[in-house]
Length: 193
Image (cartoon, rainbow, N blue to C red; front, top):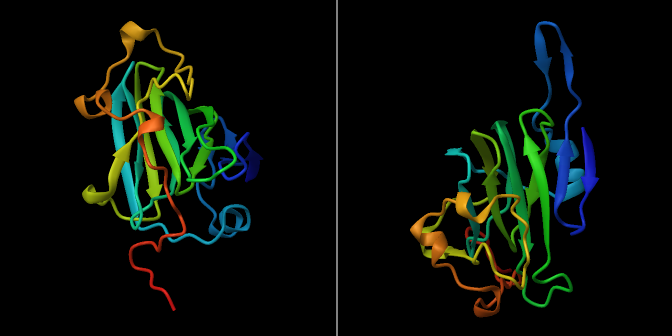
């Protein structure tokens, strides 16, 4: 497993070693020891999967404390542009983003830690997307940032006419309208000594 740093030091790409022949292939899609060596100790508690067609753009989503959520994401089928945006209050990289192509060909996984908004756009005819989450989905903590905020400046690699959004994502606030995530707050299930 290779670990690749991105322009945002906390956001990491994990690229597995692929072993294949004429029969097919095998790779380790998750190794706790390697993951924790680079991203820190995490307990994944929920796996999600989504199916989307070309042009679907999901995001930019995050959960506010105390349910801030980290995600390790990968594509099972298709190609997506996957994006993480730093929304941590007081962060020197607040508002900056990274965008990475994830596909069923490169098998790369992107780690999006708590304090980052996440979204993806489907560039292939369809895509199956998998998320490993380190906190449960909590509707009361659900939040987002507008996908096309010019202050963030994401090139989604889709013609505007092809972008397909949910009503929720069409109404997300701009970056300057959110408070930013304060990760000094305890996470759900944790306690102060």
